[in-house]
Image (cartoon, one colour):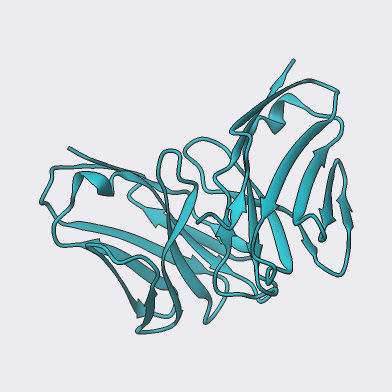
Length: 111
Length: 113
């Protein structure tokens, strides 16, 4: 069966520090991968999606970036965090039917 | 402009009664709709979906109704159980398998024992 994991689960970082959140999927090949952010009162916002290695589409211009160095690995990064980057970050993959399967989430607090 | 709207941020229901969560959309190109359930500090989990060729889809205690003319869908949970207490997200896409789902802001359901 397919599983998705992301880490770290919680992160407290000062403003201006770098960020790296990692996500891996097991049990499937060539998945579509996504990074979402859930911010207070704003629902789920799509940040990036990837249909293959090295292929990244950005939905929201900001100081975050994503990379897909391997088929089942998706990384969310920032060189310098802002206060507004605080939130709950979710990695996901989907089946052809469009159902998204989410990871456990990563709570980021920027101080 | 929000294309998927869940106008009730919260809902409280007595255990055993029906919970009805509503969702409205504005994009007439949406033809595939999904509901997700989310517990605190966890990722959302898929609940049920419906394609625009149907007006109802049922899975156990969960039923989704779609009214295309009104651009409205609803999720019914019968009977409601305390374990159903969570945030429910409505999502829409232009076709199954779309690369992008548009989510509503969510409705927090509290089922009171």
